[in-house]
Length: 285
Image (cartoon, rainbow, N blue to C red; front, side, top):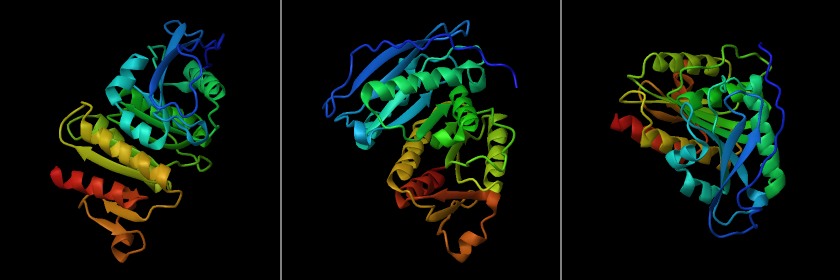
């Protein structure tokens, strides 16, 4: 493992001060973290506080943008606004630029942790497990940041990702995951499919969906990610349904049909709504 950059300072300045609990309008704030990474000396973060923000029920969704996206660009592109308002999510986006930022053990992981600690302190948000979402290089971040400190993550999702963690040790906590990719997005499609097989064989709860097309970020992938995270937030129970990636069929988890779905083709769902959307998207392919 290569040595990490030393994070020199995590001095954060919020644009609008502390949001009042119950504030009816959503608001976006930006702040900076000073790091020793050459191209990230003043690393920008953006956060969106949900409508009717309530610190006691707030959870944090970290969104990693495509390669070198600005922090606010990520918030504007993913547009998780309505979903975040419904579930009381504080959406956080870093504006990483180069310096191998997708490798959290170097410097970016410490920078993110410093930012999250300040957000929680400023807005009185409980230290609950995180949600991660990313596209392309942001998918690499969702995968590798999760593997770096898996106990801190409740669930994660990646679209059009080409880099995954190599080893899945027995000691790692396998959080629920969603992996999506365009079928023409080679070699990312093959890499993602292989990772999904390994994650499932290790006992992980992973849902897979592929789409027509290539590397582009498509609305259907973001829609499925929202349904996935909703199922995690709504249900603390194990999956109740099993999907067959090959046929697109969905079965109750304790059925004979579910028993015959091979591990490498086994998508799982904690809610009926998540399974229904996955199946509708399968039929539209």
